[in-house]
Image (cartoon, rainbow over all chains, first blue to last red; front, side, top):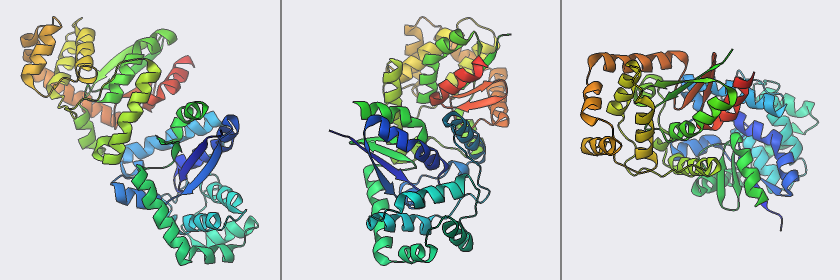
Length: 197
Length: 197
């Protein structure tokens, strides 16, 4: 029986981006099905009392060096985004809406947003920039933004975030293999072991 | 030329304990010289604004599961200490004093204290317990406690902690290989790579 790999993410997390770059290989190697779980990291922080490592200056400085080391190990592009932290509410609502509709553009959309923030250093806090990024990638920006303003979509992201917190999630990315939780893009080896069992 | 591996630690950190169990092999495999750097983690937290992961309940709960996974991977004993957090001021002063005197009991003392806290679940907040643990290990408790109350020793631990912070340290354990900093017992593979270069 194929296992399920749940991936809780928010586009604003550089660690979630790094994990995302490894997710396809991780699922393929283990024959697992990846389940993407959009959540609002800001909501998780508010509910748990956790905070971005960047809230401690010395830690924030180190973390970006640490992420760069992992990017080098993984062989993936990674740039510090000068507009960090990014308010991802609308971006995560769009992901939620696409997933709710089982829209096949979900994967493309996620790839475009992760790349815009963590490779192309775009200011995704800025609405016109978001529209420009989506349009340039052939995505229908007005339709996606309309999706983000639907009440069912807003409610779904809120519920998904609350559900993540109820499961024990306090940061991003977080993985679940069955009921085992793994936090961080630096726990992929443990995730791999859990999938192999 | 043999490289130097600097290990900043505080006995109260379970991650510092896990790293300590791997330190001899890490140094031996790479031919590096390990330099032990006692510091007061509470002082580091106060200076940097960082906090124990246990200050966020969901994170604290997860972290102990995470440490247990690493202990299993390393094949070393590890128990949750019910008296955590331990006030390590006196314990770290003794380590500092022994090191300052180039006392050969330094290594034994560190092993005894780490084991008392993270294997034997001793309440090392409690002075009579500390005396009992030291005596049971054949260490001269009164002499060690007298060392902890010497002004030069107190000053040295304070200076060492400030110096760690000045170098960018915000948590424990922290390693330096040349000027490269690595935080966490989960970065030993990166430390190993840096030592091999």
